[in-house]
Length: 222
Image 1 (cartoon, helix red, strand yellow):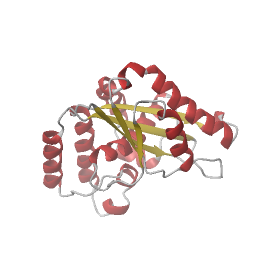
Image 2: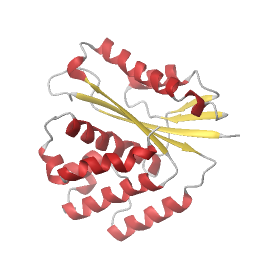
Image 3: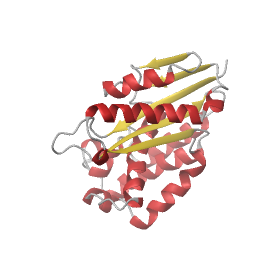
Image 4: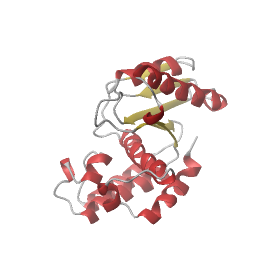
């Protein structure tokens, strides 16, 4: 049986309260389980041991110098980012992200509709790809129920679809790649659309490398 695993994460608040994010991001990592990724993961985990951090990678905290990374200098934090970014480039996986600018979204109802539309369009556009698989398993923890519901509605049209809510995020590197993508794809979007970068983003990333991040991932995009 040919199986596809899809790991989903989001960034940004659902809603329009004061102080909420302007951008809503959903990122996906797609893994054809017939392809072995063990050697890539082993090499990645060895690289993390060399850096001196083997825990879960959470990109927002890494860039903001918070949480597990509050005592790490910027060089060590950049080494962690580079390790997971290059893992993404090397592994036999596909990726996709969509970004909704809430500035042009008038209500929660419209935002919900846009999320579902983006997911539906993605599935329709890649129908032949998805039809190759006998089973499709989506891993999303329903951190936002609206997105979880949209995932169920959109993906239920595919063969033997399953939605797994409870899974090991701490040790699952593919989910952590999805988390990383929500941040890096938002950064690319902001740079390409002349959004102001946060001070943390400007301190962590070299502006002249943002285009390179985009080019390095282009062959992975579905």
